Length: 396
Image (cartoon, rainbow, N blue to C red; front, side, top):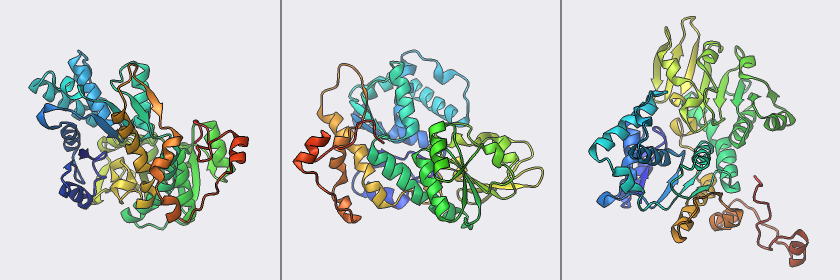
């Protein structure tokens, strides 16, 4: 087993040290540079004797992306030599070209024994779907993100706890009475909206999907565009999994002392690169992961965790209980992949709900939940097993 982080700010050094003490190879520390991060990812998938991993438990798809891009480079792709859209993309390309110069067959060696990958983020799953549709996916992949245990306990309940934790640790600002704008009303956005409302903030939702927008409106939230909130919004949280959700133009027009943070997986939800290179904008570091930006007109905004995950960069992520259920869900599919033969046709599949009981353990008792049990007659009436699962595969 070898472990690396999924974010340059997310490692808790004391926890990483405890893992290393148990004899597990750890390649991560809090506050990595982008170059450090991607080299650590490469080292984590570089096993002894030149081998690669058999199973990958991915978080954001970075390990999967690095392997595929390296493999494609050896197959003749020129992607690594093309113009980059941002600094991080260039870091990836530089690393791939360096490895290729040292060993032009390195990635073919790494994928030789690779059997499968599980992915637990919305954006990572989107990447895998695209690769599968383009017939580029090298191994079977399991979508853990859309399992109920993950989407609810991690995305919804976990973010409901850890967003406010990150805001408080970063700035300790009073949230009550503030106008908080949440960009995205998926499970993460729902959790964020609930936590901010619970603190007494007036929450506004920005959403592209009419169904999600309707859900937000029915919960009593104002639903409008980011542009309509500029000048009155106090806190902006991106939670969409998309790019350019909060733009440089938005930040130039925000009210003085507005707070900007991201809780989607990647930092490109906020145009951080454009902000850092904008003419006349001064950056002042207040403390680790808290930066003040002063614009030419004198107004200031605070950017948290450099646009990366605020709950991990400025706090310690989700509490243990909300991780206890989804984290085994992430590992269980990889165990399954290791026990079955490699399919002749590569597949991208959902993590089935009837495996949920494998990961829940005694958690229900710990939180005071006592489940009612169906009688055989009731189960027969519904057409489900007595022990479940009780919901259809598409239920979320």
